[in-house]
Image (cartoon, rainbow, N blue to C red):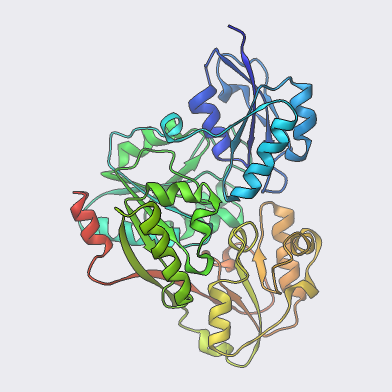
Length: 438
């Protein structure tokens, strides 16, 4: 039987997982190349033959996604496999139409072909959109498990933006591990909170190996989802977080709608700050597509003990990068705190340099709030320069990390954190008891 030529379209995460689970050592397919999108600079690499398996004698090339039509023809591609997330259904079908028009099949791999079964219980926290509140939900779950004497290991959705061989598996326990692994700002945003809680977190490229290592350390594994992807591990409990600020998106984005339909528990987050009509719309959509899900409303409680100092002062607001860019939000926790204390928010666009200036052009919905972009040393320096150019009194840091750890700025940083607080009689501890996880 003739092999099918495959192109995997990704963004340095789901694409490598799909390759390793579905295509590695599979004699019926030949993966000719990957394409890369969303994350700047990741297309300038190759997928190592040492990870690719016995069927591949050379590294597999990675190209920019804009070359997709010519790559289909150059490599006589039969199947293009979409392998990244946080895309509108419209965007997905535009990509499908482009692929079909160039003669190839457009493929979506589902849970049956990509989820790995663990020997230990797995709780997965996913979302309908980036920035809905997965991290604070994951922290709440871990706190409950540890209170009930469970040893927990967190496995994070991948962010392998450097040397793929060195990042085959990554284990983070101390802040020094972040420095050693040369982590980006996005990685700091996801790992800092776990390290401060003395929770071990794994990530990387090879999730079979990562799972094997995590199982040795854990009573329960928590899948801390990213980019509203669905889990790489088969969950015993799937919790999906919905965002009333983007109500309706739970039925309009890939694969967020998949998470919404599969969920055992749906958390309607940010009830304390979101519009009531958004909450009602999500409730309506739950009844339409997942009426058996347990529904929990929750507040996203903002914590910033020193924020009163910014009252009536000039500030630059820095928010989580992915939430503001492909997540589509105009602002986050930092902006809300700044408005609460009547601070004057200066327009970061006027001070942007390098790639940060290009980010504002690419995402015109951003209204002066600064996304914390830092996928490379150069971009981290550009973020630092943008903040240092700004004429203001304080930096309001609404990112999940503490920017003081990754950049040096010439003005005080006011840190904003956020925690999940469930409302009503049904809470996450009762859910974990119902599923016999505590």
